[in-house]
Image (cartoon, helix red, strand yellow):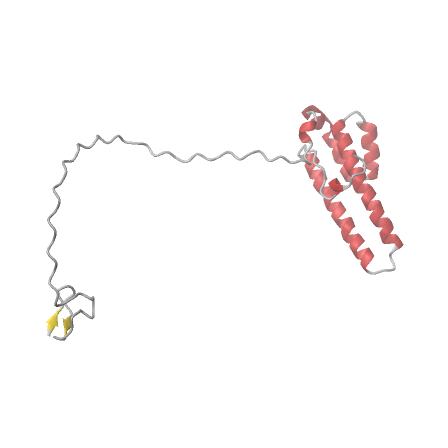
Length: 179
């Protein structure tokens, strides 16, 4: 029996390689080549401690929202007429009349009056179509959903006024009348 010089496994006498690790059993180790003469080493520079540099966050580019017109209005106008602009969205067509009487010189209120006027006109048109086609099944259901969407848009606009913003409402901004 042979013994593998590398892993120590017991092997048959007639095997040329270890079945466990693959070492050649009959081969003689090759003589090592003489080492090349070592070049003289240059003296190492003294180590200077370097503080780790934390990665700096890249500032995000400001996002431009073409539907946000808040910067176009005077902050004093916004703060003075915020309550009147809220009335517009709370009371619908009646709020439009009240706002037109109370703050006819305010561009901020005028912006919100135009948006509420668009929403009110859409509500009236949807209600008119629904009343004309009430005998169908689908049209009143779709019209009811459309009216619900318009009410949600009205609520969103109210909360934007609470924040002092002047953004065009979703869906309504695509209507080109009353610019």
